[in-house]
Each structure stands twice: as C-alpha cells, then as structure tokens.
Amino acid sequence: MQIQNEYYEEQSIKNKKFQNTIIENCKFADCNFENCTFESCQIKNCFFVNCKFQNCNIISLTSKHSEIKNAAFKKCNLIGVHWNELLPTGKYAHCIDCLKDCYLKYNTFAEMSFIKFDFSTNIIQECMFEECNLQESSFKDCRLEATEIYRCDIRKADFRGAMGYVIDISSNKLKQAKFSFPEVVNLLNTLEIKID
Image (tube, rainbow, N blue to C red; front, side):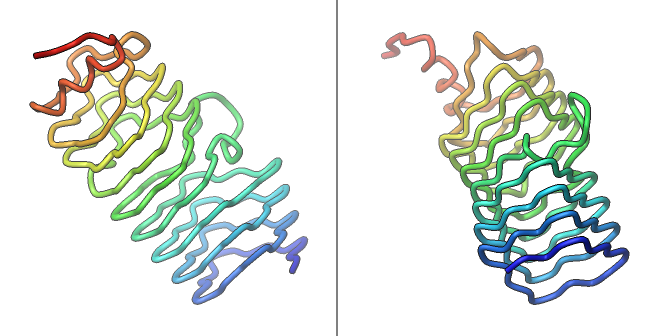
C-alpha cells in the first residue's frame, strides 16, 4: 500500500491500520490520530506538524527526509522508533511536545531537547538517550528498565522513584540531579567497583 502527495489539515483520522505502507510526499498539519496503527511503515519526505496521537501503535517505523514537530502522544505504544530520523532541522530541535501514559521500547533519542519535560507517566524500556538536553526533566517513578542515558545533560533532572536506568556518570552532566535510594547505587555500576 502507498499513500502519496497528500495534504491533510485539521483532519481527524480514526481506527486506521497501516501495515507495510509507504507514505511519501505528504504533510499532516494539526491532525488528530486516534486508535490508529502504523506497523513496519516507511515515511519519505513527509511532515507532521502539531499532530496528536491517542491510543495509537507505532511499530518499527522507518523514515527518510521527514520531520515531526510539536507532536503529542497519549496512551500510545511506540516501539522501535529512531527519533533522530524525524528531527526538524537544527540541533536540539523540538520534536515531541508531550508523552503521557505511553509505552516505549527500543526507541532512540539523539541530540534532542527535553528541557523540563515530563516523562513520569510513561514506561520506557530498553531505550537510548544520547547527547540530549534533559535539564530539569522529570523521570519521577518512571520504569526505565535497561534504558541508557549517555552524554546527556541531566542537571536538576528528577529520577526519584525511577527504576532500571543505566546512567554513565562519567559522560553525563549530573549536577543537582535528584535520585532515590537504593536505585541510586546503580550509578556506580559503570565504575566497575564492588560494594558490600
């Protein structure tokens, strides 16, 4: 299946399933996607601006020359999404506005800005944050099983009650970040020391 050369503005798109679909040369502006599934889809030369996704499944998405700006995700499953392929032009560009009650697995975030961002209502498993600005962001009570944070700025970020994170203390900026015991002991794992 292929969708080409379409422009959608302020459209409500509900209960659609796109599987192995190529979406090419399309623009979606201020659209609402609800109960939709995008599985093993390719997006090429597409733009999503100010779109909202609710109860959607986005699985194994690949993209080329495409951008997402100011997207909001609520109660979505986001699996195998490489957000650096969807970044607007410019380092630390603003791609995601809101993530609420979502399940994320195998996602990668690189060179993205999440200043004062609230991750606290999400489950984030086996994901990677690399060279992101996470200053003052909240991961409070977040399940972060095997989620790696590498070469990021997490100054004043809140990890209290969060579990499962893997943070390399030598590569991240940590000043005034908040952690809780006993999970904070995991920060020492990268130092390969023994604690009795």
